[in-house]
Length: 488
Image (cartoon, rainbow, N blue to C red; front, side, top):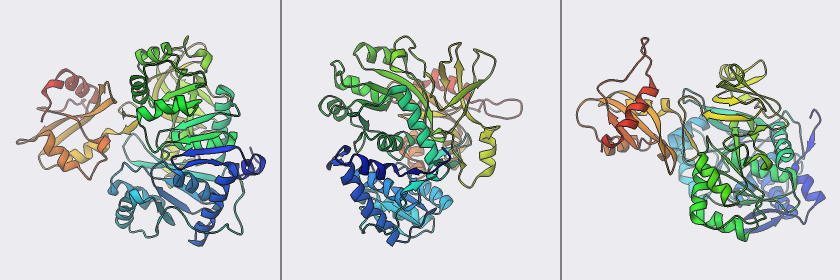
């Protein structure tokens, strides 16, 4: 791990040029075909002035263009900054201002978002995809394990966006750990229907290139299309969150095909009834626990343990150490150590020092390790809301609510929801008449749609501790009891 490694795509194009590398709406590409396109795009980036170490932002949906851009940025030695296209222009601008990319790549669908965000961040250099050019004279064809591959934004417990810096060594170790657990077969096809701007989607692209297998990329999640792809496109591996799995099972009442080797389900605790339903239908579901800061998977069940360890997120990958900061068998904060842990938060040494102490990454998540080393996830970060696989941090939504002139107090929590896992709910203290529609209208443009409160209840006051800290767990209990009394 201390020596330079060949660029994964360059190596595969040389070693197995005619092997299928990628399947998108635009067709199938071999490793030779994909490498040829990446070489041209890398030359285009160099012609635009991109140099090793520069940051390159990418504002695009899942597509062939997205995949080519990922590898082309690596071929120039630059650092990829994938942007969540569900964010508002103001939210994107905040991230761009922090990393200050040399250029901002965007597809046609998100050109308006990219230009508006760039303007707000006082940046120029928005370039449309695909990237035209010619093969560069000096492509970067090797990478050191400690070199930065990408910066993916996540949020701390305060809700402030932070860029997790992930290295080539992080993704290499993550791929190795997954391979030891799930195995790798020559004809594997791993379906990416989650956003490629998230670590779970991006890791599928990189892992497939490392393995020399195929990534099947869908533009987004469509339950019917995924169900058909599993059967007709011989998908062997699939990564989803619980709500996606539920919709796939609703869409296709049949049993899983034999070629489907594993369905990884993450994004938070998975309802036991859903796991049982999937296993009864022959879906080889394995629960997994991962984080952006750890290049995706931290623990994952093995297929052999899927039934007898129902509800567990499995054991740590072979490249990873996990411990719980509590007495044996008791719930506590999950700590992670190993080569999958990020280099740190971009341009935030204080946050990095708080998160990584004595070599251990402090996740803020709560779990329990049993005597056999299996991890059970009890909750995501104390106040984190996971809605449809997207993280929502209460502090950010509360700040937006408190900007409303009629609202003097706000506490945001997650309420259980059959479709989305959780929905955002808020208890507010307000003067005058305030409706759910009024508040959502005021928040439009400030928050992404998945962060919008779906339930709002007026309270006389917010429950607090003696020191004045809001007790969100009590607000959650109040809103759960009075869900029928929501405003609007």
